[in-house]
Image (tube, rainbow, N blue to C red; front, side, top):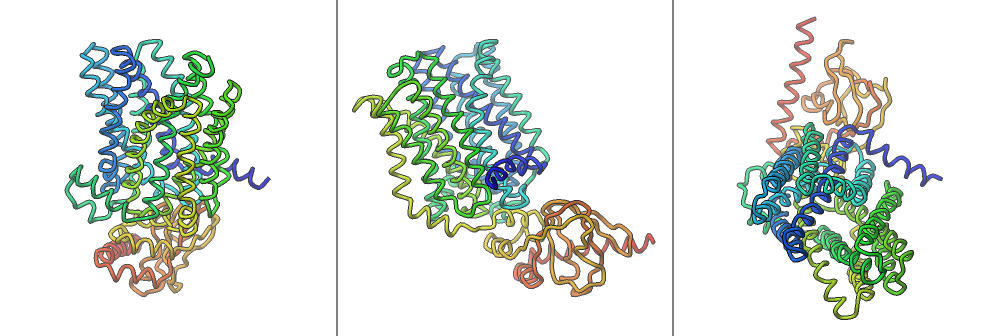
Length: 551
């Protein structure tokens, strides 16, 4: 019963936060647009050259993204991730519009084939940028876990909904109409994330000039020297070999094994997507759990076992059932794996880590589609099912002990770190110092009417508002209201004076408290941060002086 309540509350956890709600709606729109445009471009290519042209369309889109995704993802580490995400959605809408215009004007197919990889490069940015932005819009770690589950639902749901919508638009006006419709969806996603900025970049990253190829190589080197992040990126990337293989196996199963005809491929694909939605519900039960590696390992073993059973005993009923189980297992694996990766990846490299994962996704999809013909040629389609799942299961089991060790040590306070980065005084701090401060924060929940700070008291703690709202008063007169991302209580600590104002909670709030000693130590050891704190304190003292003069 308790676990059922947890599952039921996951959606509420994600949607009660206005910023998180905007981010998740935009991500759902993005996923739908991605799937629908992918299908529309394959239909266009097939109409201009058959299966070989469709395969070429897939390759020309995947290869540039596989090569450049880490460098493009680094933009979200070097700039505010919210700004990068909005720009990516806008670029996606523009390039989709260009594709649709080229088709409508009956431009040579070569033009469309040249524009398609450009559009796909814009699609490679949103997932890493969203992963980098998520911790900064969440108020607490459990909210981050819930957000990852909802993101998984969005991806699985798009497998069901987007092809159907694309089919309607393709039937009504061909590929150009489908792509125009998705360009509008991408523009809507940009509008949704427009208010979300995210934390500022680490100053050293922001100052470096952009060099796509050097940034790609640098990102790979940095992640290669971080064993936990390296292993999780490789394990998560391996799943896309299975996904790429299944894209082709749906067709082979439907036509050559189950005699369902061409339409059967779509139905089998939908069964996998439906299983993914159910898997999202199962993954919701993981929200709030300290350890995720056991669920990650069980998820992929369930997917591999389902495919192996289908290979041994093929049949229409078995196909729908086993593919749904495979989709369920893969969804649990993906959600828990991404959440664990957010816990262990260096906070200043989140976008780059997920950018490399995006690159491995494109490479895995291509490799999976190439692997299936080889396995079929060796021992037939049924063996290909067993082999595709078995290879991934072996890889995960080989890494099982290390995954469990990473899970045991995964306690980087990513949500707290991103909250601190939103404050100008802490933004200049290097990543290790931010992690130290993040570990020192203590969560404080307070209901309306709670006095957090009382004027005249001795100052012993600094507070950061993660959720809710507080009112600042002096001598009973309101000075200001503070909400998410604001700090309170710094004047007494910096100037060693009694509290200069009273702070009362006006809306249910989650605050993070930082004791005086680590607060002062962090600022005194880093001059730019100390100067930013002094400026903030002077501004607050100015507000109080203006209030006194006005009285």
